[in-house]
Length: 233
Image 1: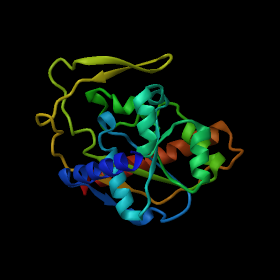
Image 2: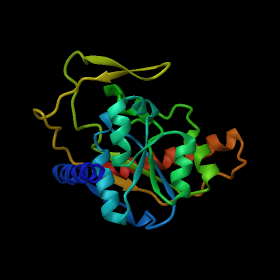
Image 3: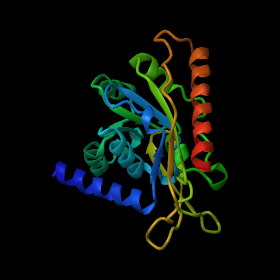
Image 4: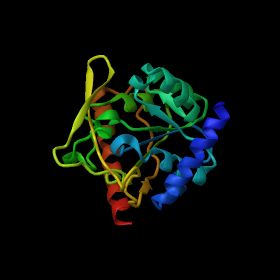
């Protein structure tokens, strides 16, 4: 069952990449082996993820793993199927486990804040004061590869009135989920372009919070630069 679900998802990801004429710039910066943490922006609804993972696999021969919002693992069916598709519960212990096993791991520090963004937030990083991925990189001691996707916030449009539903993924958090429309049941056939930057060294294991913050901002600046590259490609 698990293999069948994975193969079906892989075919769907390939079709999504074809539908959106998806391409990857800077694939030479992706290591073909060894642990690595990719950090970048998330598109609306996270819809772009399968196409991006398909491109990563095509470029490296590796099956990427994605750190997923912990709240999804509270939902019975999703917490069963998500790991079959490469989803890893977004806790530091789980992330360390897969990185130490040598995985290529994708991290979206903006998480649900970027997935459920309002229209004015298109292509803006919502990392707030998040230092989790910086602490993870420091503790794991792995290279960090910044990336950005363009077109990822244009696959659906917001109807007049911007209708939204409430969604609670974990205690204390309630996200306002936008109800959006595409081309009938399909997303709009916009072109998806992803750009990858050269790897950056992680912070030292004993880095202070101020140093982690400085490092996070340097990674964010690289992601923004890659977004410009992807937009202009």
